[in-house]
Structures are given as C-alpha cells and as structure tokens.
Image (cartoon, rainbow, N blue to C red; front, side, top):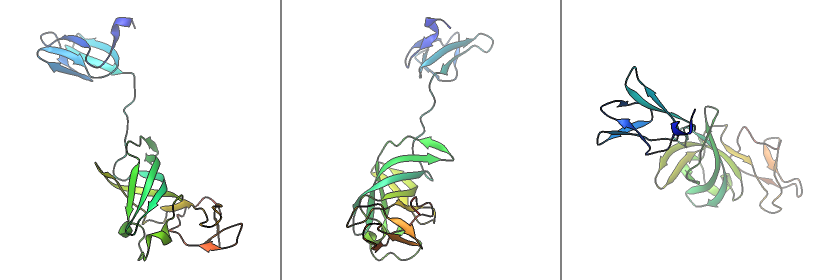
Length: 187
C-alpha cells in the first residue's frame, strides 16, 4: 500500500465517467469522493471506486440495550441515571448521551408507592433502554435481572449486603428496601 492509496473523508477518488461510487464513496457533480478514512481501491473490471475503511463502525445506544448507571437524582415520579456503559447482544455500545430516566411506572412489575423506596442517590443500577430521544434516554427496570446491582446505606454510605433477600448495612445492621436485581453484586 502506498501513501497515495490512503484517503480521508472528501478525498477525490475519480470521475463518474470512469467509475461508479462503491463502498464508502459518493458522487458529487460528476466526481467521486471518499466518505471515510481508509484505503482507495479502484476495481477496473466493475468500474467501481471503493474505500476500505480503517476504523470500525461506532455503535451507539438504541432500543433494548442494557445499561449500567449511577442514580443521580430521585424525583417523585422518576429516577435519573448517569449512564456509564451499555451493551447489546454482547457488543459494547458507545454512550453518546449520559442522561437516562426511569419513570415510576417502568420501575417494577408491582405497584410502586414511592420512587425513593426503590432507588437512592449513588445506587448502581442495571436497566434496559426503551427509547432514545433528543431529550434523553428512557429506561425500564421491570424484569428481575434489572434494578440495583450495588446499593449504599443511607446512613453510613457503606455498601449494602444482600442477606436472606434483604439489603443489610454491615456496620449498623439496619435493613433497607430497593428494587434489587437478580445480578446483585454483594451477597
């Protein structure tokens, strides 16, 4: 590969009279240009100008992605999360918008009297993406595998341990309620 074969977005590839735009190439006013960083390949047989990309496609969060986030605010009818990571079908996803929210009706299958009984600020939560909008990411945690995966005591801020189905503070012995994930970390 010579230095001349490396192209960048907008690099000239050839004329429309000679070639048609192939993979990662586009036509504008009779000229062909690259839309990616990569190696220029001109197929003389098919009369096609292509660009073989050097980089992988960036995959962002979309519907049904599983995210991990930290509760940043608990409101009367919703919980706000600062999303830290996401994945779908085992593939890591890029988090482009860190603001996620779980509405009170998307927290649990059962009736939720108060959002602060289910989540507290600082809890680490696993949730599923319902919808990605320009205003934020809507999440839900109804399924058993979703919910708090690590909680902290309201009084001592020590990590809570799951003992006999209840979250217990190891320092004070007090128990607390949360929407606990089946993947809770401290057992």
